Length: 147
Image (cartoon, rainbow, N blue to C red; front, side, top):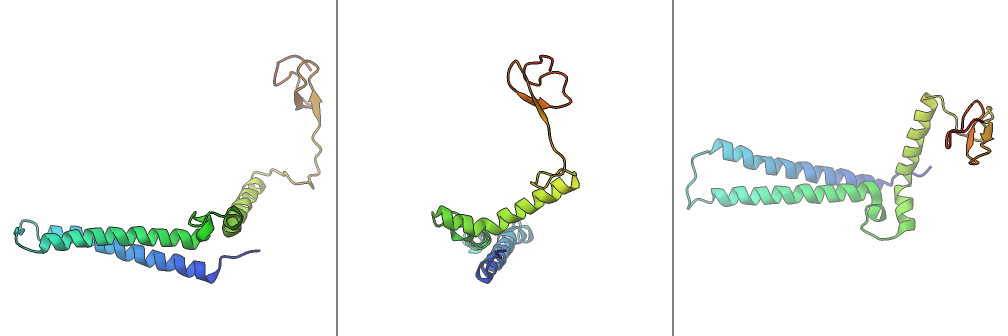
């Protein structure tokens, strides 16, 4: 079973830290604005400070999100490198996880789709339209004619 590499995990967590720092810097704009409401002087550098922190925080949030995506999905899986085979390899742990989740849901619903199913399914073909119907059907599911 393939696991996500330590390098990708590190990139994901570094990206998360960068995004959180960016969110805090961006949020500080609103806090500063609220604390200094009405104290604006056109010659003051306060407006430049707010704009710089706002754009800088937004940049850090976007950069952190991109780094997190690349760390989680890999370079090819995130679309940074256009290589379908490598993308499939990068995304394999997640597709395996999705298959496992589907199997858990089918098991919970008591549905067995495997080759080892002990129950045989018998289908009856309609003489009119050739549609396969379940064996206990009295009428065709496609054309409605009696079976």
